[in-house]
Image (cartoon, rainbow, N blue to C red; front, side, top):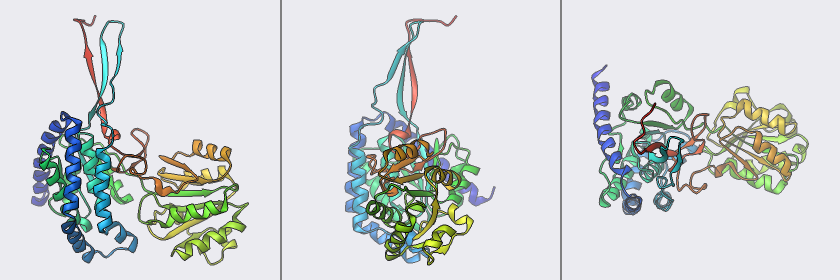
Length: 420
């Protein structure tokens, strides 16, 4: 182990111990106290807006990525206000730890209760979007968890300024000082130290590109709740209303191209493509969108660029849309199964039977009917914010809010029973 790696291991060990102490305190703290801390954090964010924007300006000065990723990084007064408002919305949610326990009595007289409890200490590794730190902190506190945050190096100054404000508000309300902590530097070896922090961190949540998620899954010695890659589809069925399809697709692709809920591939029934696809192309080109289309789509719209096979497996996070003609619902479902990431997929149609069939068959964490895929967001789902969009077979799927960051324990009450 190098001296630098050993130093990061020591740092995460100290942070983890402090986080565990904070988590133990939060787990037994009344919901009203946790909510008061969140409201104080929101107020502190608003008060610190000039400092946060100045820190973000430093990050933007050195940023050299695409315009879409620059939009993810950029903070404005409205976005700082949205962060504060999101924290308040989380505070207003029901307490996820207050659900009535499930209780049953065994034939031997033992009374068993299953009650909710926090997971403990969360580790969040994320890229680009500095607001993720505020969202994650609020959801962690709401659910009684402590959290250690490691944002992308490109958003380091923004994330640090946000954390200063959030922790100031939490402390003013009497919450543990170390309930929310951030990486002390941009050293990439700190990530490795987090991934190896078994016994200190209870769950690692990566939120970023495919390479980040794959690295975390490969190297972590801590359980991982993986954020899904957004290979999302909008499928326009032959019974779609054209005006609705045009409006929804434009929003699904171009509202914010750099978010994980953006549509990356358009699937359109061949039966309506001659009439509708040229209109869709015109709408999106006017918004600055480029296209990667299969041969059938290019026969109708020759100015579209030819799609390479790998394009349909690419999360563009930019103003680029894949286009493919399909023969019907089953053909669309087959393409989604082959190329999607089980994040968010939508059908646009006025045929309820086709819609319900699609919704039942698609394996995505979120499936939609006649709505933009960009509604896949914890705030839009009523969670106030989210800590990521999860897929997989063994844990919660979809937007991860406070309830999804709790688990269960069992309480057994007896009258002197002994096991034969």
